[in-house]
Image 1 (tube, rainbow, N blue to C red):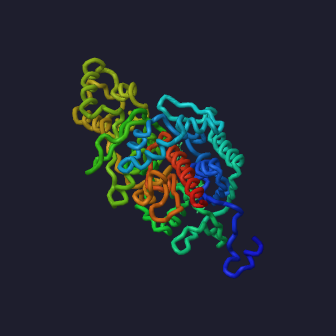
Image 2 (cartoon, protein in one colour):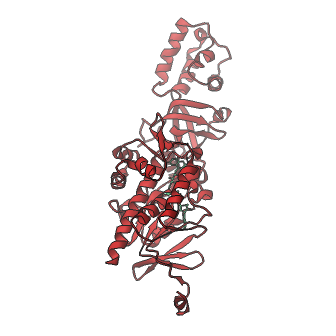
Image 3 (cartoon, protein in one colour):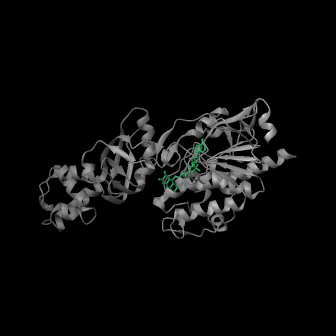
Amino acid sequence: MRFLRRLPGVKDIQQHRGAEIIVVGAGAAGQMAAVAAGGAGRRVLLLEQMTQPGLKILASGGGRCNLTNLASPEEVAEAFGREGRFVLPALQTLHPGGLRGLMNSLGISTVADEQGRVFPADQKAMTLQAALRRKLKELGVELQCSRPVERLWIENGRLRGVELRDSQRLTGRCVILTCGGRSYAKLGGTGGGYDLAQQAGHTITPLSPALVPLVTRRRWCAKLAGVSLAGARVWLEARGQSKVGRTGDVLFTHRGVSGPAVLDISGDVAELLARGAEAPLKLQCIAGMDAKDWMGRFDEWRKAQGRRGIAKLLQQHLPARLCEVFREQANLPPQTPAAELPREAARRLTDLLGGAELTVTATEGFEAAFVTRGGVRLRDVNPETLQSRLQPGLFLAGELLNLDGPTGGYNLRWAFASGLHAGQSAANFARSSLK
Ligand SMILES: Cc1cc2nc3c(=O)[nH]c(=O)nc-3n(C[C@H](O)[C@H](O)[C@H](O)COP(=O)(O)OP(=O)(O)OC[C@H]3O[C@@H](n4cnc5c(N)ncnc54)[C@H](O)[C@@H]3O)c2cc1C
């Protein structure tokens, strides 16, 4: 070591004592990769730019960490969209009990809710992060925080290790990039991993925020800030977009809309906005009830409960504040009885209830996006091993890749499973390169 420092040209090379595998980024994917590689007997160095590992894990699910779900690997692949089949090898080679079984072996018992979302049994993200850290220590993985990797160290086409921001070089037989995406910079989403992958010749597909609240043109949305609709449907009334949209909870905010159904469609909205257009998002207050169905309901009320106020009748199905705002939007005087509802006002009201147009002008941006859409192009990475097809010895996992899933534990499931898979593959690679 000391003599190496004296040789010209290598004074900045730190021969890290025995690291065979360098993992860049200690999030969900990186920590799991380090656990897998360390568990396979390899010497692992885990580098993290922030002052502590797993900041997104700690923030996930509002601190409860929706770490996976009960969907089958095929259902997960479908949820990840067009190129979703890429996730299958990593998910299928997981521990027999799946991710839950694996977590159990780390000392984390889990519970599933009625929607099939899985959380740590004590509903604390902190417990999961602490267990990961304990396991890293037990396996002898060296974790170094506040160590941002600036460049891959590639010499004559051979991957030699990484270079830190202070120009220090660290050697490793292989490198696993698990730097995550570009969202929530304060939790480590700085997007630096894309530069590292590009350095090895990888292409980055266009990046946009996903699982992100939306800003709408309609001012009445702001009057409803804090109101939540259960079982609503949102869809994009635009060419090439599915009319089925997303069903689930919708939450009104001061600037627009959020909630699971909105978040799940927000990636498509952001892509549309990136092409320069406003996004014509539509909201059906009760999924499956279009304007015609509501008109039918109004006719029933007219006949059976004609003396009751229309807003009051609506309140049997929808939040009172929303009924009031919609009544105003339809220019209806308060207390208008159902029997006296003018046809034109009824039409305005049923149009709002069955498909209110919420023209989206912007998203709340990367700083409020739970994930990033876009990333390292999948065709240049082998899904069977998660090794780069362009740079031997380089492995990639997690959100850094061009994959984003819906809410409900899909993104962490991919991060953990792909991290594990990349760690195992890198361990095999390191072992075979020793022979
Ligand atoms: C607030 C919030 C809540 C969420 N809740 C959920 C949820 O409940 N369920 C779910 O499935 N998903 C959730 N997600 C999404 C999920 O957290 C991410 O998809 C997942 O953490 C991605 O894992 P990753 O390991 O690929 O990336 P990350 O977890 O982002 O980890 C990447 C790590 O790499 C580090 N890094 C980056 N560049 C460098 C560099 N150059 N050198 C060294 N280190 C570097 C970063 O600091 C970071 O620690 C949530 C996201 C957010 C922001």
